[in-house]
Image (cartoon, rainbow, N blue to C red):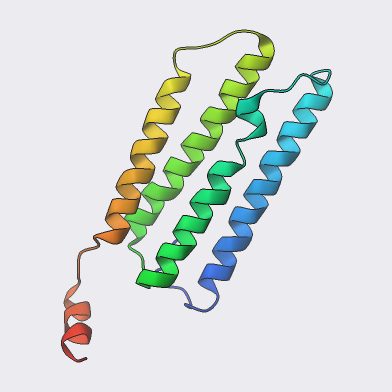
Length: 138
C-alpha cells in the first residue's frame, strides 16, 4: 500500500491497520502452529511479527515526514518485508522439524535488499516536474 494517490489523512491510518493485522496474523499462525506441533516453538517463528511491526512503523513515519511516496519504492519496501516475514516463518518450520536449509538465508538477503532499496527509493525520490513548481513557489 503506497501513500501516493490516496488521501493523506486516511493513508497512514489504513497502512497502520494493515500492518497491525499482519502482526496479529503472524502471532496467530505462530500459536496455531505450536499447538499442532505439540507445543514445540521456534524463536524465528515467535519473533516473525517484528518484521511487519517495525517495518510498518518505519514506513508510516516516512510517509508522514515525506508526504507522497513513490509507488515503486513503496512496493519494493513492502515486498522486502514480506520476504523477511516468510523467510522467518520457513526457518521456524524447519527448526521445529529438526532440520535446516541453506535457502533460508536467501529470503533474508533478498528481503533485506528489497527493504533497503525501497527505503532508499523513498528517501531519495526523484522530483517530478509538478513537484518542482510547488517547491519553487514557497
